[in-house]
Image 1 (cartoon, one colour):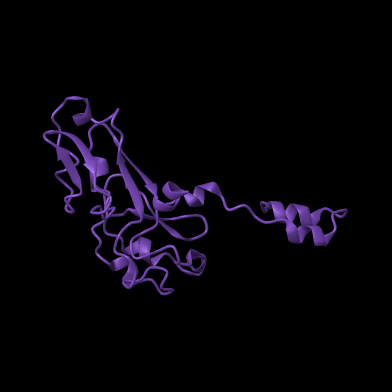
Image 2 (cartoon, helix red, strand yellow):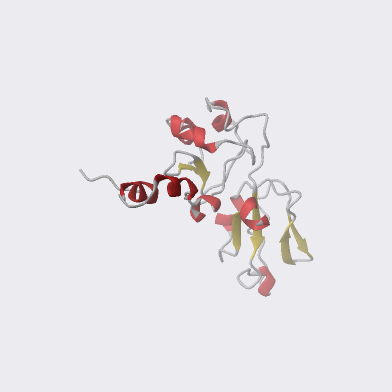
Length: 178
């Protein structure tokens, strides 16, 4: 069984490279980890590296089945098909307090309506995104032109799958602010 070698391991195997030079080589943080949407009850100080010690209880108890484990063991949210009900179960089972009821019960993400895809922005009466929004975060100017009020939006994601034209996009807050 062959084991895949990472960049640091490869460089350590090179006999002509001095070990001191290896100390300057830093593993790049994969771009994809920055694009992960983290579960509620976490914040920017949550130490997701602790999740490698866990068996993924948060993913197992998620009734909506929107939590998944990344290859490092940390949980992330995928809104394919459903949204978050903020039931608290993921935080209640977290043994390492990466997810905690003491932290925000909000998903730190930015939801945007892509105007060129949105039926309402293009003259068709549609309230598909507004109907499931329990936060009343989707505001219409008259019967057209919906916009998401980021101050009211909890990040539940229920608006995504109800949009018939897939006009709602979501990005982690960290990526949006970068």
